[in-house]
Length: 275
Image 1 (spheres, one colour):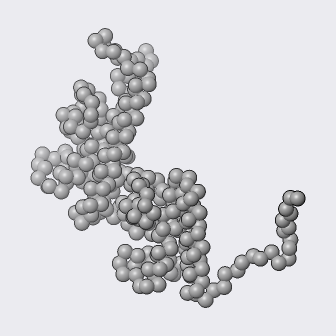
Image 2 (tube, rainbow, N blue to C red):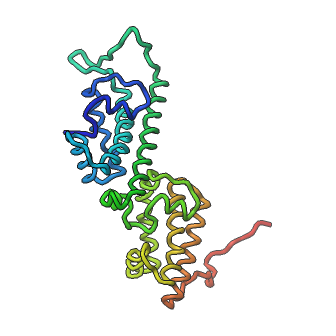
Image 3 (cartoon, helix red, strand yellow):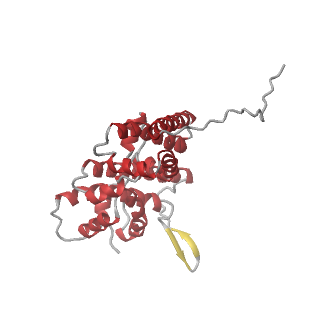
């Protein structure tokens, strides 16, 4: 099985510590770290990069540029995974740890701190990788479609930030996707499946005046509710609910529907004030 690196010297270009291990030592962790790179690129493009990285001729400027971003992501996540396992030997005598009397042993606290820093660098590199693909979407069409298709009304972190003036990273947005799904089910229940599908088809193209107004409620509502679910923001939740109610009212005017409201006329619930 191949990966994005072929030598330890290549790996050294992307990590901010002195690396002296042999390539075969870090190679298993590179394979394990593939899953992090794949959070920001489609599998077919990634596999093409692996083949390219292991080829003798590397004369494709586009693949070379993308390889640089993905290698940085991969290297840092590989060392984040490997941090606590490097220098460990498992054999007939159990689990042993290699030591060197010329080097100071590192404390668990420092080791955890280094691991955290590698993960932080990995996620920063992943963000750079995603933004690069987003900026070069015409070049990396498949990768872009994988990341930013029209599955949801709010399809990118940038769009969410522009809608509700937040600073959400792409990795935060991807973690929100499971939360976006039930929000869109609620939106579909309000406007109906036909209108829902029509809006999905035209949202980034040429919506008419009515569709534009519907999207004006839907997109910020979805952004607010997803942000609220991710970051436990009551303020954004209330704003999202308010926008969905406005959407419900506006849609009722389009469909000539009467919104039923409970007025407690039968007085089954009584509220008693204190004296």
